[in-house]
Length: 154
Image 1: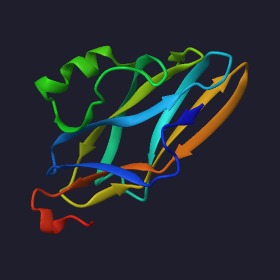
Image 2 (image 1 turned 90 degrees about the vertical axis):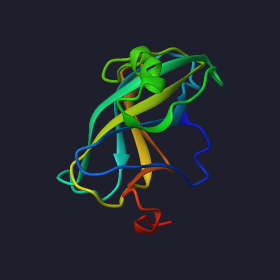
Image 3 (image 1 turned 60 degrees about the horizontal axis):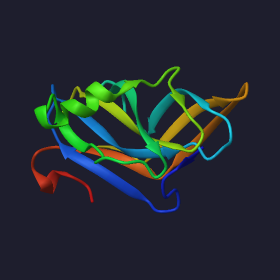
Image 4 (image 1 turned 180 degrees about the vertical axis):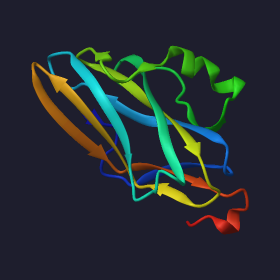
C-alpha cells in the first residue's frame, strides 16, 4: 500500500470558524500488492487538541485501477452540494476492501469546535493484507484557518 507522492510535503486547506464542519479528500492510496487490502482506519497526524478541531468520520472512495479516475474532492465546508456525490460514493473506512491494483481517496469529515489555525502535517492509514497488519504515513496534511488569511500560518 502506498500513498501518492510520499516524498513531497503537501497540504490542502479551508477557511472555517468554530461550529463549522469541513471535509478533506485529497489524499490517495494505491494497493500495490498482489492481494486485496482491508482498510482499518485513517488519521490526520498533528498536535491538535480535539476540543479545538477533530475528525468525526473517515470514509474511502474506490477510484478503480491505479492511478484511478475521477476528480478528487479537495477541501470544502460541509455540507456542500457540489461535494455530495463524493460523500455518497464513500464508504466507512473500517472494513473497506481495496482490491489489488486499485487506488482510493480517503475522505475526512472534521468538526471545527473553535476558530483557529489547526494544522495536521501528515495523513496515516492502518490496513491488513493476508492477515498481517500494516501502517503507512504520508506528508500530505490538512489545515483549517480562520476566514481572515492574515490569521493563517503559511
